Length: 122
Image (cartoon, rainbow, N blue to C red; front, side, top):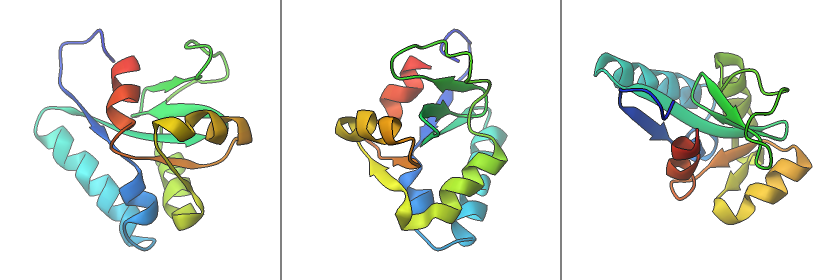
């Protein structure tokens, strides 16, 4: 994403998991992404799933190896739904929590302190 000439809007996923009940949280997240697209930017909702950092729809990162072959794409609709359905069972993940959530292969919803960093690194 970072090599392109378009705006990328980093979206934290804590609002999806902890901000409102399911399924309202999922529909709101999808609407926010749609608003970003309608305004000419690319939404990059960021979440941790299955030991990987997913950034938007196109990119995922391994915390240790940036081009991880098991990481085929970013956060798709099914994965966003997993974060939404997990609700408060998802780990609220700040920068200091990344390694722990990845090691446990837990669902991690990102906070505003980590989302811009993940988006930039993508």
